[in-house]
Every structure is written in C-alpha cells, then in structure tokens.
Length: 442
Ligand SMILES: Cc1cc2nc3c(=O)[nH]c(=O)nc-3n(C[C@H](O)[C@H](O)[C@H](O)COP(=O)(O)O)c2cc1C
Image: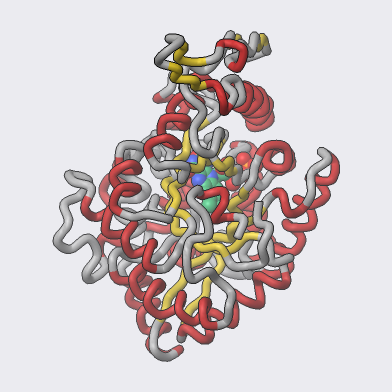
C-alpha cells in the first residue's frame, strides 16, 4: 500500500468522548454529544489542514459487563461507552473536508458480506473514493450477546469465517466491471450485461449468488484494514489488507512485528510494500518537556483509580475487580488466554511492562501508556516519529490513538507537529490524488 517512504498520518476518533477525556478542560466544549455532526466536521477540517490521510472510527457494538459482572462501571465512567454507529457521520465529514479519507469498522463475525459490500460500495461513491474498511473479528462478550451468541465464537473460528467473508466481499466488489455503465440513450442500453457477473459463491458460512447490484465505486473496493495481532490475524491481514493497525509499544517489538508480517506476506505471494502499518501512538505536544509532563499528569489525575481496571476488563474480557493488592499482570495471564480475546495486545503488555508493577498502578496507566507515546516539543516528537518510521522500514505511518482531546490536542498536532514533519520532508504538503488509496501510496 505505502509505496512512498513518507509518514502517513491518521487519527482514531473512537474514544474522544470516553477514556476520561470528557473530563479534560476544553474537551467537547460548545458541541452537543452526537446530536449534530459539527464536532466531527470540524475535526475533518483540521485533519485536512494537516494533510492527514485518514480519520478512523472503531466499532464494538456492546456494553461491557466484564468488570464486577455488570454494565454499571462502564456506564458510570464512560469507559468505551456509548458507541454510536458512526457510518452516517462519514458522508457529512467528507463533504466538510476534501482530501482526507475515512475508515469505518464492520465486524466479519456478526455481519453479512453482501450487506458489507453494498454499504462500503455506497460509502465509496458518496465520499468519492475516500473510504476504508476496518475488517475486525470482534472479541467482546456483550457484543456477541447482542448479536445472539450466548458463547462468543472461538478466536480461530472467527478468523476462518473472516477469510470467507473477505473472499465473498471482494468477489462482489469485482462482480461489476468498471466499463459496465453504457448509458446509450439512442440504443436504449443502460449497462452491458457482459460486464456484470454472478459470483455463485457457496461456502461454509455464506452462500451468495451475486452480482452486487451497484455501479463500481471510485476505488472499486474500499482500502482494506486488518488489525489482528495473533497468528490467524496476521495471516488474514497478509492475505487481504492494504493497511494494518498495530499497538506495539516499543521499537524492538515493532521491528519484530514488521518482520513477521513481511514473512506472512511472502508466504502468500505478496510484497512488504503491499501493506503499510499505522502504529498507534499517543502524542502530547507542548512547548517544553516539563510542560508536556505537566499535561500528562493532569490527564492521569482525571482518571479515577479503578478506571484502568474497568478498561482492562472490557478489553480482555476478564474481571479485574477481583485483583488483590500486590497482584500483577502476569497473575491474570491464564484468565486472559482462556478468553482468547485480544490476546496479542496482552502478550505485548507482558513483554513490555515492568513485571514488578502492581495491577492498580498499571491499570491507571493503561489508558495513558497502552500504546506508543511521544510527548514533548514538536522537535522531540518528530525526532521520535522519524526514528521509529525509518527503523521499521518506512512503510506506513502513525495513527493518533488514545489519550488526545478534541479540539485542542488534534489542533495542536496539526499546527505544531505536522509543520515540522513537512519541513523535514517526512509528510506531504498536499494531497497527491483524488482517492484515499492514491494518497496512501504517495
Ligand atoms: C488501532 C486498532 C483498532 C482496532 N479497532 C477495533 C474495532 O474497532 N473493533 C474491534 O472489534 N476490534 C478492533 N481492534 C482489535 C483487532 O481487530 C484485533 O481483534 C486485536 O488486535 C487482537 O488481535 P487478534 O484478534 O489477532 O488476537 C483494533 C485494534 C487496533 C490495534
């Protein structure tokens, strides 16, 4: 995907109202929660000013009951809750800002590939080729229960279903050839039937006849993103994705991750340049290191002591309210493994967190330190981004992950960090193409 070596920039908008960011001064001020699209349209305009490639909405359709066995804690604290369906917001944002692309999540475990192919075809049309699909397999119990599963489908089976889902969706996007629309008013021919094909797919999970009853969209298929960290997740990404999200937290594991993905790509006959990685990062920009530390301290203080444990319970499907003083992450490893949920990211924590750190201590920092962090002056931040980018093959870029507020933090990123990236020739000064895929390749 990422044919150039420039740093691609994205922002994850999934958690702007949760993670205690709603407590931060200035956050959401003047904007109604979800009642209108202005908040998101303004973010899109800011992202466009920073020539950012993509704004991303994650999705999990559930209300975690993992902490203490009920939904009370997540609702009280606003921990990953609420989660509106953000699909309708995207066309409004796309109209407000040109250039920037949008990624939307849809689960391969709970949806149907025909519906998915149709929705993303429509989104690609209305955004004029600026849509991406984050194809996730969904690792959350309450979400499973909402879609009718008393027991969550097993991890590896979710990925078998995902392989079939992607095969069907891609066949549907290819089922109508680009030149199919004829519009010959004189001869009365709307479209050429020879260019419209049934897919006649019969599989283990889906039977789909096709074709997709839709005109080919500007990108034909959305840019496909897959963020799996486990073996089957990496295989799915290597087979279908053009972009991967990763939450590796340190340079050695980032390099290892890139090498593992390249190995998987080779095994399916693809090249390293076929998939760019966007590394999740929290960026805290300030005019001095001391000021950045002070801002971090303020954010940490806004997080109630038990909140990190609530968040970890939701993420890993394990009840961390049972933690006794002095227990550490490793004490919960077997429970997390048994859930077969977000195992990859938990193993990354086990590798990178000081094993002596108590769970209470880690819990709070989980919201702040779970992903890479770059804090300090724009120069210090860009030094760090540049180093990480080139040491991992200069193949992708960064996605602002958790822990930034809107509008202030995202505006500061665009006004203070992006100019330094552009000055060093590391990120683009204008959009190179009309579609998201073209922009990601330049
Ligand atoms: C940046 C990022 C965004 C993600 N967004 C979602 C999401 O919106 N919904 C979801 O169910 N999972 C999401 N995931 C989780 C992954 O799809 C995947 O389940 C997780 O990384 C664990 O990998 P594994 O399933 O291969 O063990 C995201 C992961 C990352 C790194």
